[in-house]
Amino acid sequence: MARASDLLALARGELGVGESPAGSNCVKYNTAYYGREVRDTAGTKYPWCVVFLWWLFREAGAPELFYGGGRTASCGTLMGYAKTHGLFVSGGYVPGDLVFLRFSAKQAAPEHIGIVRDVRADGALVTIEGNTSPENDANGGQVRQRVRPAWQAVGGYRPAYEEDEDMDQAAFNKLADKWLESRAALAPSIQTEEGEAARAWAEEQGILLGDGQGRKQYRSFCTREQAVLFLYRLAEKLRG
Image 1 (cartoon, one colour):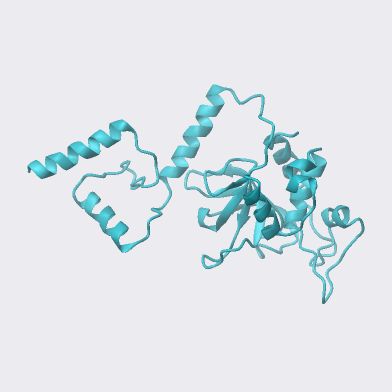
Image 2 (cartoon, rainbow, N blue to C red):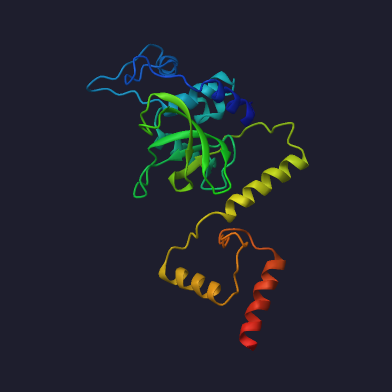
């Protein structure tokens, strides 16, 4: 078994590794995967964003956590495996998750993948990815750290990692607070005419005021204290 922190430490150590020659997909991860050096040709391509993750789990001594110990270089195949084995998550990402990415809002199938290093307060994902670069998101030829907006995540694969021993209550509380903070920054998910009208009404009536920093926190969780406050404000409006 391995911990998420083990995989991330390995991934950080690979930052900057690239293809040689550039644009060939000839890289050490593909060499390990195929058992020989490979290069793109006119009829054959060797993308390696998934292969990079396969390599990380192999190096960590936990190949069974990736695709059940099997091999695949396909984002779609790996996502299908995650779904059929109860390992798929559609939000609430945490460090160590393997996140499937798209680069067009109209695209439903994953185009790329990376491992989550951190989650920012606005929901953006800090990832480490193989075969990327600022010039080419999904075929950039390098291992790089990237920042991906939340909408680019199609979903994630959460391996059954061993728990980190240093995750005490204080560390857990800090992580939970950070996750809740990220929820507060998310845009509303009900993008319908009725949903927009309901939100506009609640704001205009002063029932939902937000956090004072411009965020209405529509996708945050509601405490009983907040629920009572919303009801009180509504009752005051009805009495007035």
